[in-house]
Each structure stands twice: as structure tokens, then as C-alpha cells.
Amino acid sequence: MNYELKNIPVRTTKPRTEGFTMAMDKGLSPRQVEDFMSSCSDYVDIVKLGWSTSYVTKNLREKLDIYKEAGVPVYFGGTLFEAFIVRGQFDDYRAVLDKYGLEFAEVSDGSISLNHDKKCEYISQLAKQVTVLSEVGSKDAAKIIPPYKWIEQMQSELDAGAWKVIGEAREGGNVGLFRDSGEVRQGLVEEILTQIPGDKIIWEAPIKSQQVWFVKLLGANVNLGNISPSEIIPLETVRLGLRGDTFDMYLEDIKL
Image (cartoon, rainbow, N blue to C red; front, side, top):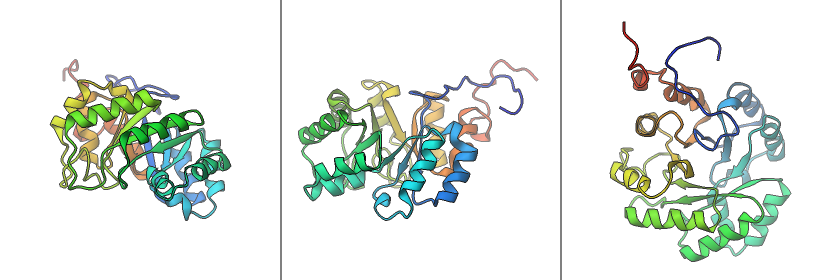
């Protein structure tokens, strides 16, 4: 940090398994990625190229090389996995991971109907090739998954070989973990945490109010995802109690 402040929470350092920040790249140019990494690489643990954007992104390999040089791994969004699966192209998907030298992959079923045992089978197969992140939750706002089902699916996907599970929210933060208003489904989150260790979950939380809610519930080192590149440094200040929303979290021992 640039100067010293007292009563700042201890942040985990890279390579992190807790306090993990996943950034969402929705189509940055190589030059934008260079700028992004020059200011934020210390605070970004992994980058997702959102949904299927990697299919149409120009200079894809150049982008991946810039992230790699900054020490930040990249993976393609789960919707791309689903696009291959629904077309019967699983082996082609695996070949794409090898072609671009990716070390992570996301397995999801938010846009397709996929038997859960089959999803776990895909996780197990991919886990022999890459580190797997699996996403739980639907992108369909009308499809409400009860808490016990979230817990069952998260646990079985971890058992199948997923490194971490992702709580679905989309880039808009208005499905899955959240109501269509963006409000957190608090009871769902708290029930999940009774059975699944917090360090095994990445909570998608693209909206500041959602990030604040999770930091207040679980502290500075909560795992958060789908963070816009422009919101990485603002999120870090939220984690550290250096933004108005969390300003009082770590000041109990200070007397004016």
C-alpha cells in the first residue's frame, strides 16, 4: 500500500484461495487489458471472458498472453461450455482449452437442461485436464431453485472434482442468488453456508450493494465474482473498510 493506516483488516495475498476476486472481461481490447493489469493485477485472481465472448473476440491469443504475463489466469465463460455441449462437441471444447493453453474451465448449466449426474461427469472428466469451476443456479429468473437443491448440487459438484463452486447471478446480478430487483436472497445464502464451506464458494456479485452485503456478512476475504474491471479497486476499498459502505466495520477499538 502507498501509506500506513491502522485498523485495516488482513487481506490474503496471491495466490489466494480466500478473498478471491474474479473479474469479468466482456470484450476488452488488448490495450485495455494492458491498462487493466497495470493498475489491478494485484487484486485480480482470475479473469472470466464472459459467456461466449471468446468466440468473437479479435486478437484473443494476444489478450491471453497479456493476462498470462501479469500472472492472472483466464477461463472462458460457462455459456461457451454449454454451447459446445448442446451441439455434442465436448471433445472439441476440450481441444479449444488445449489450443489456448487454458488451465481453468467453467462447467455450468444455466442456459441448458442438463442431467445433474451428467454435469458431474463432465466435471470429473475436465478435472483431469484443468482446474474446474462449476456454476450452480439458473439464468432463468422464473426458475427458483430451493436452498436444499443448491446445497446438494454444490456438494456433489465439489465431490466430482470442482475446485470451487460459483453462485449464479449473471452479469446483471438479478437471478440466482438475487431477486430481480438485485436484492440478495439472504435466507438462501445463509442456508448454503450451513453446509458448504465459504472458501469453496465464489459469490457472483456484480453490483456494489451486493458486494457490500457479502463483505459485511463474511468479511474482507469473501470470494466474489463477476466484478467489472472498473470496479476492482473500488471493491478492494470496500473489503478494507475504506469506502463509506463498510467504513465502520474495523473501527471498534478506535476512540476519537
